[in-house]
Amino acid sequence: MQLRTDVSEIAGWTVVNVYGELDVATAPDLRELLIRLVGSGSNRLVLDLEGVDFLDSTGLGTIIGALKRTRTNGGDLRLVSTQARIARLFAITRLDQALPLMPTLDAAVAGG
Image (cartoon, rainbow, N blue to C red; front, side, top):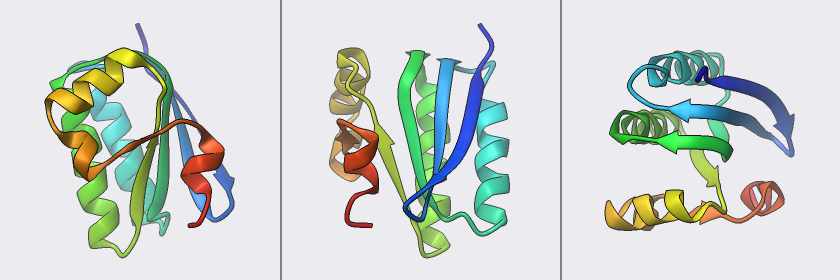
């Protein structure tokens, strides 16, 4: 399955809606998009993962890279997902401690 993204701006955050499978085949495309966004000054990113059907370790690596990149540039990364399988993956890897999953887009952009 192809990875599809939509980019928008909400309350000072650049929101990237991600759809499809985020895996070894598609993660490089998302990585390049995120590098371009941060490079152009969008260092406050929200990744909305509600449309992600599958997430593997390469996808997780892309998310971690984006977190490091945004924070290095004085920004932050927030994630949106209510999917149990994604929450479980974040809990198993303990990434939920560094990067909690927000239940809604509104919650992700609030207070920031």
